[in-house]
Length: 93
Image (cartoon, rainbow, N blue to C red; front, side, top):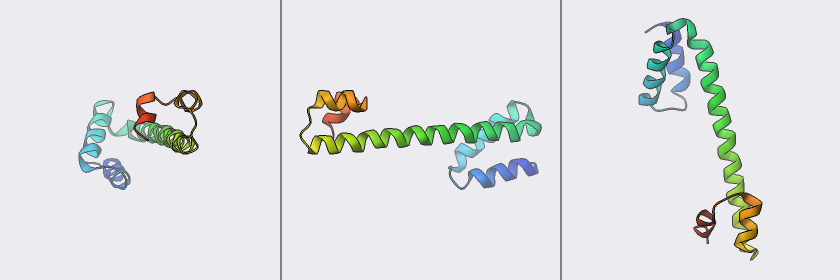
């Protein structure tokens, strides 16, 4: 394991499980070895950031739906306002 792989393990170890880190290292090695690690890591981090934003937006929609339910707003209106499924909204009641 080279310096870059150890660095990647250290950085990713802050937020991921060891098994996931090993999968990422293995995939990076398959796609061109150590020379591609920095750009692959940048793409991975960008993807993680985008997924985090998406999760945040979804959580915001769920919180909005909960508040609207408490106010007695009809489920059909909440669906239109949040793009959440009827099943998801019903599970919040």
